[in-house]
Image 1 (cartoon, one colour):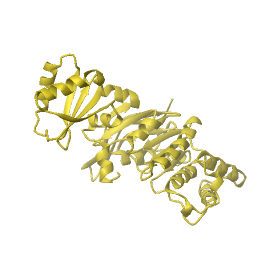
Image 2 (cartoon, rainbow, N blue to C red; image 1 turned 90 degrees about the horizontal axis):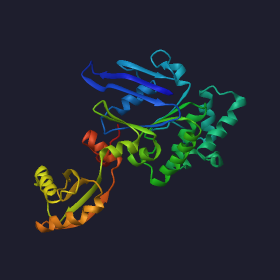
Image 3 (cartoon, one colour; image 1 turned 120 degrees about the vertical axis):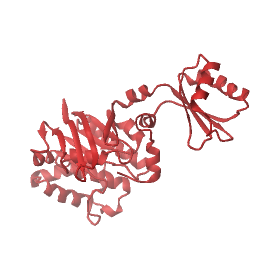
Image 4 (cartoon, helix red, strand yellow; image 1 turned 60 degrees about the horizontal axis):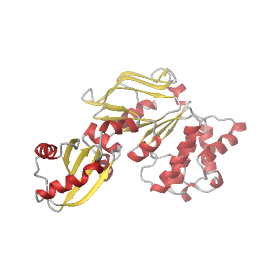
Length: 330
């Protein structure tokens, strides 16, 4: 059953000159963890703001719990949880005091307040440190408390905007565990993230956006399988940037007809060759020998299976690694 429905949604800014989101359609099932991915400027933030009722679409319809966000925004807000990148809690208060303050904003009754706070803190594994001042918390603990603050009113859907950005792997894993608890309880989770391994680990399905469009949607493993083949990375001690990729692919296919070679790409530094093949381990020695016979000596070899970054590159021609290295979040 779809708990979020988006039908042909477009968002236009600057008197129609900028289409931040263009004719996007998607649905999110109840109890699903759904990930929204894409390079910088893809339209993720605008889509996220529309889903959380912060802005309205220019065209199209968004329904949450079967209700239109244009007609019932207050009702929808009362039933969803939203965690921004900033969080918005008071560093000078304890975790418990912060949650009491948030609980009052949600109009949680005095009789139900203690139970709501305890349940939320237990979900994110912070109950034992509820009386510590927030400024003493680590970055990962703060992020988990932000999630707890969004759980006080027991929302059916939790929206998370880049919940682990800036965290080290240990703290990211702690937050992942908290999200798994919510998933097991049947909470629907909608997440944006720049970490592809995070999306692969957590999400039942993902959607990739590029230039305002939805370019693909599906289960992470299915999307990776559609990329096809293993990948062989060959490094050389000299630049191969001038190589004609199409010609080289034809030459290899003629010399090694039993190897299914789908694509060849030269890396940005010009010293690495990337080949998409089926059953790479069966052909790697023949491939290296072929290059050696042409006085092109391979200095290192690496084999990997398709990743979500490969899916991203296939659909957007860009890698999210480039966005992370630029340290820009949209």
